[in-house]
Amino acid sequence: MNKALFLLLLLAFVAYGQQQADIEQDSVEYKINPTRLAIIGGTIVTSYTAIYLILLKDGWWTVSKGFHFEKVDHDFGYASNMDKFGHFYTGAITGELFAMSYDWIGMSPFASALLAGITVSVTQIAIEFKDGFAPYGYSIYDAIAGSLGGFYAMGKRFIPAMQYVDYKFTYFPNYKGYWRDGELINDSFIPNGGFFVDDYYGGNQTYWLSFRVAKMLPHSTRDYYPQWLAFAFGWGIDDGHYEREWGSSRYEFYFSMDYDFEAIVRPRQTWSKNVVKILNLIKFPAPAVRIGRNPEFFPLHPWYGFSVTF
Image (tube, rainbow, N blue to C red; front, side, top):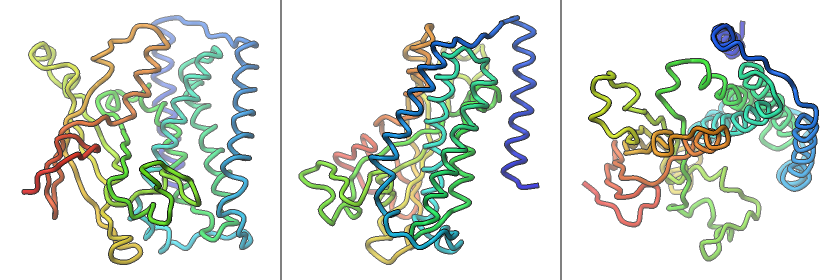
């Protein structure tokens, strides 16, 4: 059995068991609201149509080579696989948004998260299918990464261990290599053949695992620790792709302070809880240390401002 499919089935099994326990405890009855269903359905159709016409209809797809799969060595050589983390993150944040929308319709938490994951998976597979006609080709591994990200919301809802860790993202163009061909003009982004989500290099994109330390401590000691203070481990890649040769970028790793907005805002209403969920998918600037070959301290990462090399 495909490992990705096995993981999805295992996740669904765990989630279903948790949902059954919640229903038995709370005896909540969920009912679909037809008006809200029509609103969400219409919004999804309109949004997908607009995204296709504005972003996806043209671009590198205009250079068609006939459908083909991306070569494995090229797939795993590109951006040192940072793109896989990007696909997962895109799936995670869109999956959360879909799950919130399906909650509003009146679905149960399990049904919302499951349908959100399926929606993101179908979307990712469709985009990759269109990629199959581009020079790069269809990437099975990009499709898997994005699809798994789509089920992130389900994991956050029903797997207890995931309540202690948030998957986050930062972007700031400290290194201009990706934008040299007139795409970064006067510090304004001009998507002329490029888009910031593809700018992985020079530490511009960083992905993080942020640990909610307060939730991990014994109850007897939590009152002595700042509830909002989290710590994050991050990774990005250097500028080797542009400064040395294609595919030669190397990983850079970071330790940083972080913020748990759930502890700062302490949301009670559904809308505020949803806002906090989205905020906790973004890594906001904080003191950070880069470790490895080029250790460096940043008073605010990713807004470097100034740094201290040691």
